[in-house]
Image (tube, rainbow over all chains, first blue to last red; front, top):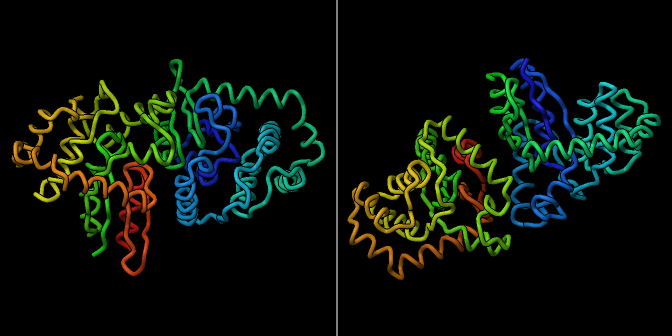
Length: 204
Length: 204
């Protein structure tokens, strides 16, 4: 069965619609979906010397992106409210997503974090907000937040970032289709490449 | 009749497929198409402090873009060869496009310039190459290249850049749909937003 890796970061705006679309698209194409959280800050910094979101650094791009997000979310019937703070701290949420990968609730949790940040303007950097979301998706807030703080989970997130960089990833959402027969794979970047990425996975 | 403005620059890779797709899409939606050449260099410099293409500045982005262009052009059955020089000087070609707007051959000329640069690896900064393209689309190479060098045409291109900036444009291809009833309009950026932009123009 073909596999598609979904590389995402909770601070990434366009990863929100992608996270809500990818499951039905990959299921329809009979493609196995793997959720791969990553922290973009270190990548942006190493590759482009950036210390803030490009949408904050280049004002005219940010203005366009927020309007475009309104349109994209409207077309997908996803609730959207421009967050009162951007980008929000995503580190703890990303570590919790990795805990969720071990526990079986990473997909529901990731969608819930996006809806909280970009649909309801809630602070996904706040452990109390995240604890509530963990509970919502059937996790154990106390035990899972403790586990998110372990060296094993921290190392897993660092490894994800290194793997993303090795795969040529430079932004989110990214979709990576490993080549089943050889080294390497095919990379697609952006919510608007999701259909092509899934089609590629299904055909190769 | 609704109008869509197509803002493009000959050095812009993704403007190539857009230039070849936009006429049939806008005709099918009964939307009036206006070709608006612009020079991106001054915009990139003023808005983002860049002095080269972002695809050259950030190597990992460039590597991805060239592979993506291969895929996009293949899907559209457009010939593609990675140019041996990038970005090529586009100033004279853009001024000639404005001459073509007065003479009625801007659309054919613009598509021919893109095909030369990204399909055949020809130097579109070379006046001899451009003269041949002008001839191909029914223009007068000598008179039209002379006119491209006049103050009137130079001012027209500068005015286009200023108008693009006022409309919030920061890259190419961009599609702008003026609001028929009020100030302002709707902006879409990127070849992958072309369908949405045409649909917006048709519906508003």
